[in-house]
Length: 196
Image 1: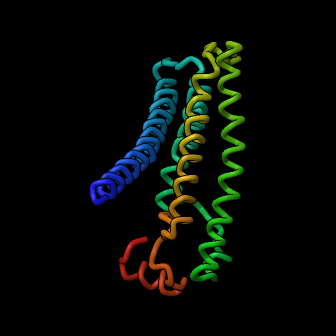
Image 2: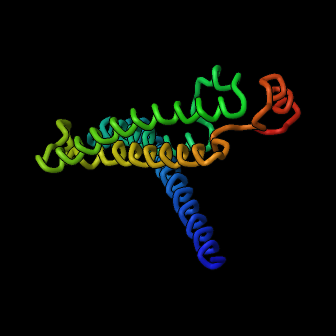
């Protein structure tokens, strides 16, 4: 029995590590796309002086921006950096707060799963029908759509992961500070250099 329990704890630890690496990897991928946007824009700006042009540079920058925005969602959510309207949740404590968190996560998960399903379907349809971009470069549309769909898939996993954790009685990973900290205490802690 002790061996089975140890294996269960080990497998949970492996799953937790794998999920955290998934979110971190998506965050790094978003960072790579941010650097790509910067490089494209700088080459296009400075390149004008030397008659250098990137064909469909604006298209590539916009595709990178979409990939960056969506791939960064899960990492941002799990780190507690996503904007949340928690005015009601901040006033609740104990079991009432946990139930409200579960309801909020459930609604968010349902919406994101719906959105993800259609994003993945759109990307698949673009691949299946060989859709190509209408700009200067006839790039297959499924390629830039992949970042959008992948980002939503990873966000869906993050939301389900968070909901399972909160249902299990754990504090949400995106919640900063102590669970009973008031807004005034939060401001005091930040002003003293306590971090966010």
